Length: 149
Image (tube, rainbow, N blue to C red; front, side, top):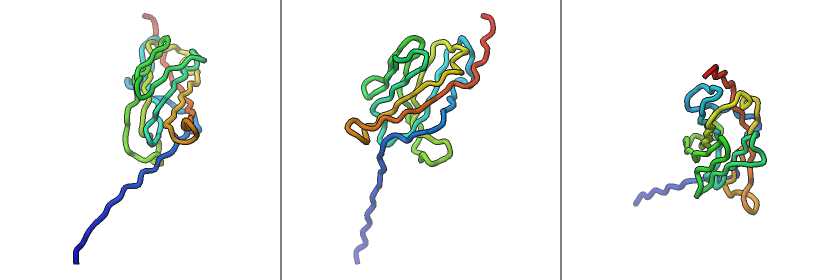
């Protein structure tokens, strides 16, 4: 008797996973200080990967920054994008885990940035004619006083 084996893989795809609460952002340097630059990482989960991400810092509305398959860097005022980082293959159901991070750089933080609610829209091409857009809300917490220069 001859033994054979087969294997298969199941991939689940769908629109980006929505998050109902406001995402509290963490930064690369730990602290956020008024007057200093900051790099922030905005988490989201999607499978397949995002085709387009739009970032809407509230103080430049209705303007926005876009990340897509051909453009990872865009700039408007004190904001610039630095692409998307693939974080992990951990499932979205894990406590707080997400698979991707959109990277937003701010050249100079303002004290009011911590009071502003910003938006990010993610589209991965799944759902509807052009895919389903999922909106995330995020906020930069606790910007410390930069003191006198």
